Structure formats: structure tokens, C-alpha cells
Length: 486
Image (cartoon, rainbow, N blue to C red; front, side, top):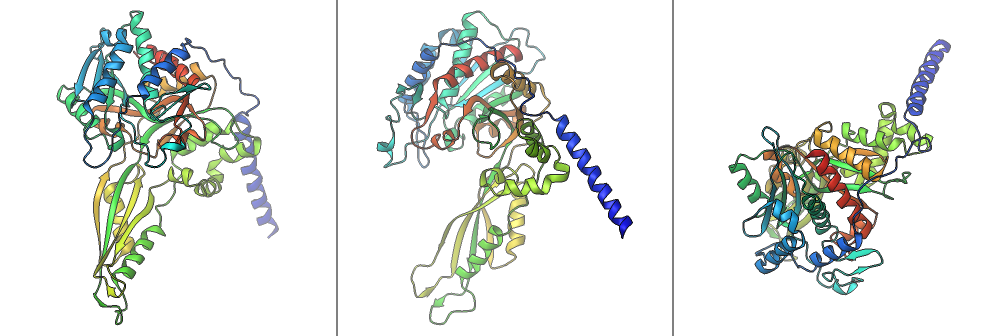
């Protein structure tokens, strides 16, 4: 027994020695040399005025029988042309499906070098009825106040468009010619899936044989004050995005009068089916991207936290449990399951012959639409319940974290923001990028804005706004990025 104890003690001390050694080698928040950010300065007041004007165009997209307002979308397109004349002179402009924009900047000597593309969207979500009066500034006024530009689209997604166009204008005005074709692709209906915008653009470009080395869209960026224990901004480069599938569960039972019920009714059968999928969520997994993300953060944290994050070969179960406690971080580790609607019965004393429920899944890239449905059927395991797909989108493939595009995002971010953590991540929502998977080697999602905790709620909510400094710095980022990659 004594020898066994000594062996176990020696093993524990050996593991502890390795863990501490790895932690010390990872560096600490106090000994990281922070480089000074260096970039071309932009006139933030001028950019703020341009975004202010852009916000006043009510380019709202909505579900149902929505038809784009040709006057509004056309007015916004014309505004971009008149505000950025040098860029538009250097680029070929084309409207696709009436409202989406394709801007191609021809490259010199681009033969054999694949083009690159920047994606964004012209449309914005509507203001929720009844909340208009809750805005500090009218939602489509574009008010510039207290160093902020207020209004719907400031963050999602007109701020990105304006910053990108500011960079293009400066480059074109000085006679810059890219070394490869550069595309700006602005869809008009991203907020409702992109079927009439991005999908049509892709079809048009595919017919011309266009294939991109990579595309870059919204969907991630720099966050500050969101990750506990990390004071610096953290640059999160999304290399994939989740898919989705909505399953309709329909249970059938024996009808009749409620005074003589069978052992099961359609409602009780359905209830068990919903619980079967809800109470057995998809397993959480710490994949390579999550580990890389944790390692990137480790250097910014205190020793005890670094000890845990740099030794996930040993502490993985602890980290997984901690991440699973927060819905936001848990969602990045697995396919999520969310029962959202339920329907059944017409009268209090009639046994319903059928009842249905809607369950929405956001699919992790390691799963698929088919595998999610098969798993649900297996968990329910009841022939009285049918499982029907009523809407789906496959998750995107994982883009490379070693490609030219990814490395350029990392390099430019260090140039503009200094020495900060950079890590791959997963976009939980949908973007127009999923339409471009078929005509691009890689698809990245990164906007060079610093997002604070309340920004995430403001994007589709009340008081959407953006810091003026964010805009000017983003324009500098896009300029440096285009110079580096093209």
C-alpha cells in the first residue's frame, strides 16, 4: 500500500510539475510587451457624418411578403456613389436582383491570383412596434452626439460598409491599384436569409467562373469587458458559423371525450417527445478551436487561471463544466436544442387527435441537418410521433486558421490594435457568408470594431449606436488590410 501511495504521489507531482512549467512558459499578463498601434489616421468627424446620412435611409427588410423599397435602396446606393467618387471610378459597379451591389476593383497583373471579397449587407431589421419611444435618439435620425453615431444599422451593418468605403476612397484617390481583383459585395436582404441578395450574387459570379481565395464578412470582431479576467480587447476571428434546422414534432393519439381518456393522449405523447430531445442535449466538446481560444486568453490572466487554461489536457473537464454554465459559451461547444412553440387541442373537454411542437436547433459544424434529425428520432423512439424538417441550413465548413487570409487578419489587427490576444471562434448566428461557401476556399467573419457588453444587445434592440473612434480605426484597418493582401 505504501509503495502504491508513493507511485501515485510521484505521478501527481510529475503532472503538477509539467502543468506549472507549461503555465510559466505561456507568459503572463504583466510580462507581455505591448506594441504601439500604428496606422493612418482618418477624420472621425467626417466619417461620422457619412454614417449618419447612411442611417437615414430606411433600408428595412422584413419577413412575409416583403418587397424592397426601390426608392430607398436605390437612394442608398446613389449616396454611396456620390460620397465615394474615387472608389466608384476605380471600381466596376453592378446591381444584382435590382437592389444588391457588386463592386469589382480590377487588379493589375492578377492572372493566376484568386480574387478576395468583402461582404456586408445594406438592409437593417425593423424597430419593434411599441419600442420607438424608448430610443434616446430617433432610430433613423443618425444623430451624432457624445462621440457616438445613433441609429438602426450603426453596428449592423452600415458602420462596416462606411468604414470599408472610406478606406477604398482614400486608396483610390491616391491612385492605388490592387494586385488582384477585390470585390465589395453588398446584399440587400441578409436579415431575412439573403435569398434574394447574396444568393443571387453568388449565382451571378459562379456563372462567370469567379472563385475567391477567401471572403470576409460580419459575424465576429474584437470584444472588451465581456471575457472575465481579461482587460484587453480580444480579437475573435470566426472560421465557421452554425447551421440551423427546425423540426416539427407531431404526436397522434386517440380522440374522444375527456371523461374517458386513454392512458395516453396526443398531448402527453408530445410532451414526452419534447422532453426527450430537450433533456438530452447534444454533448459539449472542447475542440481544437476552443482550446486555441483558451490558450490565447491564458497569457492575459492571473497565474491560477493560466494554470487551468494552458493545461486543458488535464483540466478539460473542469473548463467544460465552467463553460457549460453560461448559455453563450455553452452554445459554442455543441449543437443547441430549443423547443420554441407548441400547439394542440381545441376544446377543454375534447381529447385532441394530434398535437405538435417546434424545436429549433443551431447546428455545430461537426454535426449536420440529417444527424440532428436522426438523433431526435432515436431519442423520441415512438412511432406515434413524426419528425418533420420545416426549415434547414447546413453549418459551414471550418476555414483554415493558417491561410493567407487568416494570417493577414491577425497581422493587420496587431498593426492597428497593438499586441492583443487573437483566437479563432465560431459564429453562432447566420450571416451571408454561408451563401459564398461554394465559390470561396475560405470564409472568415471579422469586423474591426471593439464591441462592449451592451453592444451585443443593441444590435437588433433599442439604442443601437457606434463609437466614432471605432469607425475611424476600422477604416484604417481596412486600408492596411487591403494594402497587405492586394
